[in-house]
Image 1: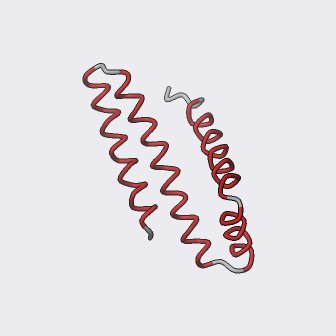
Image 2: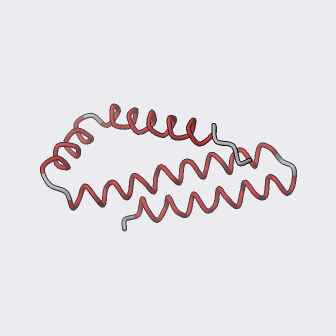
Length: 96
């Protein structure tokens, strides 16, 4: 487990607390901020898990690491697109 995984868990937990606080107080901005923090924490936690897997994997992981180091902007864009797709998928679910 690395710092991204730990920090992601903490951010996700803080987002849950913030979302509940927003619901209790009726503050939609705080509630929405909590949801954003949860998504950010989820992404960071998964990034940490991916780093752990990449550290244990073979040549394919070396290629992915090389790509990320050579093209950090493209890597960030790819992670952002995946995060946005995940957000849209989760947002479309109904609880009832």
